Image (tube, rainbow, N blue to C red; front, side, top):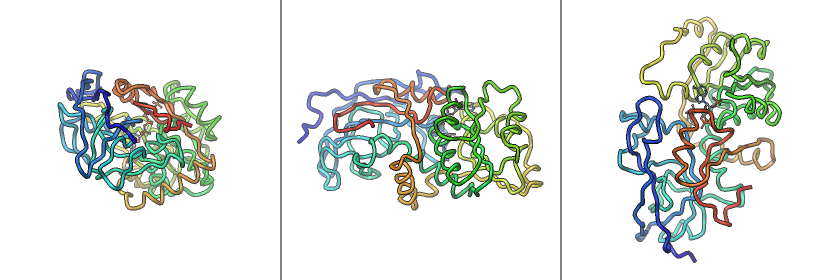
Length: 348
Ligand SMILES: NC(=O)c1ccc[n+]([C@@H]2O[C@H](COP(=O)([O-])OP(=O)(O)OC[C@H]3O[C@@H](n4cnc5c(N)ncnc54)[C@H](OP(=O)(O)O)[C@@H]3O)[C@@H](O)[C@H]2O)c1
């Protein structure tokens, strides 16, 4: 039996100001929070892990997007794994783990809507924010449903050493494709090639002529670009795309901090000539099939056929640093914040 918050203080990270261009530390502030008490039908949750994700940058802009913006003066909200400390809700017993979109705080209260049980016997609980959660599902559905890889094809993944990219590349490899990853350091390229089994890797920050490097790494051209970054990397890839090629528009992180649209090549004519397809998607487009994706990813993860790495920042107060680090390429693998680490939460 847990004792609620006991005499533990609650802290939260508040959305302090809108960024102009690159977000800064000042966009966030850490402050004491209320000591929430669960009412009938609610649970008191203690945050164990939280996820920082690039899409959250879009929520820092005031305008509408596919997900509502963060509200100034309110806690930042994101993917969280938490332990149920006190339960007045029949579906979520005390001591169990859950995940959901929850505030960046040590403790929070939920009525259970949008909360999902997490089984620590299947995998360390934080994996439900990575390979067995949103990034894993993004890689799975983006590659399999939008990219539709065929054996022998060449797949290039940009953002290849990140949460989504590292999985998309490994999945494409398992489909019998030649896989080339683009990432921002030698360490990242070594990891994807030597440990994850990518066929080749390009450090875009140390490559003066990306197009030349791509042509060398993809002698048969590119059939699928799994695009996590956009910008000039995507422009170069378009020139290598084969007839009937597919561009999986997963993300455009190189564009998230721009204050004006970048002027790039007007290249759609190339898509016409190549009878190629460019298709954006949001992972929730596949929400009614998430169980299918989790089952597939769970099997692959449990058997060791896909490998993961986590970049962990320790402490709730480090969450802004972890988030800002995404735009500086500080994470290798899935970026996570360990807020609290109960003995019951194996890290594996
Ligand atoms: N469509 C969806 O539903 C969906 C869902 C989840 C994620 N996404 C998108 O997928 C992409 C990857 O997300 P993630 O969670 O896996 O993040 P991540 O790749 O783990 O982390 C972000 C990485 O992006 C790279 N990056 C940052 N700025 C860059 C730039 N200007 N040019 C090139 N690379 C840059 C950095 O690696 P380097 O060191 O290699 O630069 C950084 O480590 C993002 O664009 C995200 O928005 C889309």
